[in-house]
Every structure is written in C-alpha cells, then in structure tokens.
Image 1 (cartoon, one colour):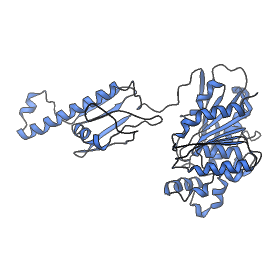
Image 2: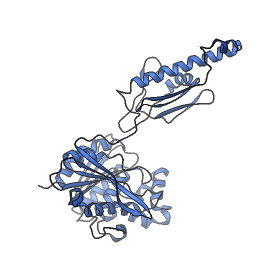
Image 3: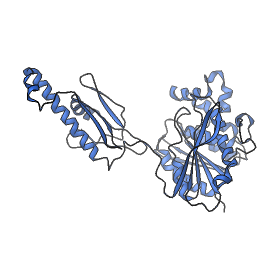
Image 4: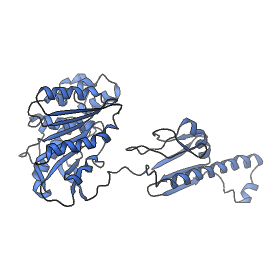
Length: 390
C-alpha cells in the first residue's frame, strides 16, 4: 500500500525508495521497483509535477486489491452555482486546483493500469511454492506465557524422512519474522523447511535468541516422526542477524550457557550443516564501525559494550570454533556496508585452521541485501551435499 498526503500548500510527505528515476509520458513518475523492495520513487526532477498534481487531491491506493479511495480538496466544478458564488480570484485558484486534482486522477489511473506488469506494491509474501504444503504457527516453545512459533514447509508427496533446513530471519535481532522464507524454494527438491520466530531484542537480550533457535531444533527432533523429518540431518541457514544465529547454532552445540531450558531437553540442539549469509562473527570488532551497528549490538547485549565485553565475546560465533563443527558455507558481498566482509573472511580462516569443512564465497560488487538472491543456488548445492543421504 502506498499513501501520499498533502502537507502544507506544496509539500508532499511519503516513505520513498527505488532503483532509480525512470519516466513514461512527460514528467510523470513511473511505478517501478526492485526485487525484495516494495516502495515507490519520487525524485527531484519529478517532484514538482507530482506536488502540483497533489495540491488538489489526496489518495490512498491498495494496488494488490485495486481498491482506490480518492478525496478531492476542491468543489464540484460541474455545479455552475458553485462557480457563480466564487469571486473571480477564487474561481481561478480553485479551477487550477481542480485541474491539478484531475491530473492526480490521471496519474493514479496509469499506475493502476500498470500493476499487472509491476505488482511491486503488494504485501510482501514468501515466493509461491508448487507441490508443497505449509503448516503455520506451530508452537515450539513457550516463554512466560508467550508462544514462539514456526512455519513448517514440506513437499506434498513424502516418501520417507525429510532432511530439514531451519531458516533464521535477519533484522538486526530487533525486527523481522518467519513469514518471508527464501529457504522454502528448496522444498520441491525434497526438504522440509522450518522458518522460525525468535525473541527479538525488544523482548529479551542475548542469549534468548540462540536459546530459542536451539529449542526449535530440539522440537523438530522430538516431533520428527509426526512430520516425517530426518532428525539426523538438520541444517541451519540465516541472513545477516540470522546468519549470526545460524553460525552460533552450528558452533555451540553442547555449550551449557547457551542451551536454555524448557521442553525436549533430552534432544540434541546440534545441526549438521550451516549456511551463513553475511552474518556478523565477531561482535566486539563490529562496534567501531558506526553508531547504528553499535546500537544494534548493544540492544542485543542488553547494555553498553564497555560494561560487559565478556558477553559480546560469548555472543560471537568465532569464539566457539572447534574441529567438530559441521560443514559451513559462508556467502558475503564484497560491497557490504552493513556487515563488513572481513567478518566472514576471519570466520572462514578460523574454521579452516581448526580443520572444519568450510567454503567461503565472496560476491564482487554485491551489497548486504542483494547477496541473498545470489546465495540461494549455492545453498541448495551445499545442502544437497551435506544433508541428503547418499
């Protein structure tokens, strides 16, 4: 949904982002977008035209449903009595506003006509998966009366226990959710995929996040026979903050202070493979890279880094590297400005030094968000090698 509202006389306020200025017609902004982003663009060269158009109107558009609510700020100019009662000056001003309002209607109509080719304003959803079923909101843990849930994707036809991939979402540990699950694309290849929610930093600081990930692994093992899962072949895959938790999950099996408590404690929380996409590996080394990253890390830790550096080390996957770690695939964009590529390079070197089967793929000229699109195929090959029985 995209909303534009008039602000003052000429100002327009909106939430705006795009892949670059493009045009159709004369001076009218084209509705465009980029994968994984659901926004519209308003660039300096286009702003003046659209501002003038919106002086006389405000509209709210839900392109997915093609429902349009439109409110004119002007009088009904088809009513001659209305115009007769105006002063000449007011007639000129209001007629100008009316023309601007109809220009806004024209822009709106063109945008709606193009939604078939550019459905970018629809609500974000996971990619449509054919020949698959999904069971949503399965409760894997309860904490102080709050249910933590996962969505379980499986092929429609199952001939035996399925290897499992746990998808751990990103969002700086403070946002995001299980609804968008790129890993579900691997379901038709014979995987079960569990996309999990975990406690965000607004609910609890570290180690709550990794405790929840471990609880999800134990729940999957405890319910393996119910859902036709292979409890001996479980992999973890995450992006950004999710990559951090996936790596930590792979390296901290059996570490008591990170296991948490609750149901299914008789089951192991270890995983057999990890795909870490652009995840932080050494949190203390991240804090000198700007206030935004420092804020996210300190929210995870529950306070200033200087007060508890030991906790930052405890939350760093690189601290747990050992020779019995599972195979790792690490994917990172060379142009990443959120999590420096050096984080993955250092983790890879530590894993190789310890004798762990690890692969590092650095993508030239790729930033933080775009890296995931390139990582999906590599993840499929990696999990085929590490999780499927031969």
